[in-house]
Image 1 (cartoon, rainbow, N blue to C red):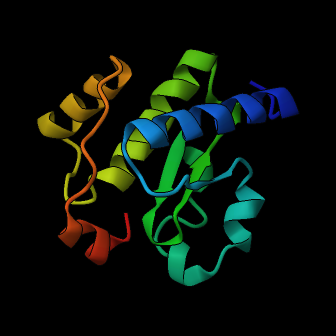
Image 2 (image 1 turned 120 degrees about the vertical axis):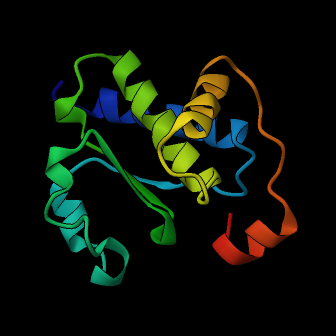
Length: 127
């Protein structure tokens, strides 16, 4: 897809929607261009700075930012899937890819609202 304002607005709307479903206390900042990734401080993007263009999405948890590479997506549904995937990374920073991670994604896609994070996670990860 082309990185058009209407698609960026749609992606931002979905990001806000899924942030509420994940019971986040904030909506992550959305960036859609690799030059925006390169403009971020290196302390936030270390390890996924120059390779971001390869991925459908990247979560920069410490910066509370999500990069969605719209150019790699072929439909709005694929954008939704990537947004949910990255929101799950922010909401559950202790989960890595695997079955429990995939279950969280499926639940959110089916409309299940997450419980608010426990106090210890809010302090430690700022979620």
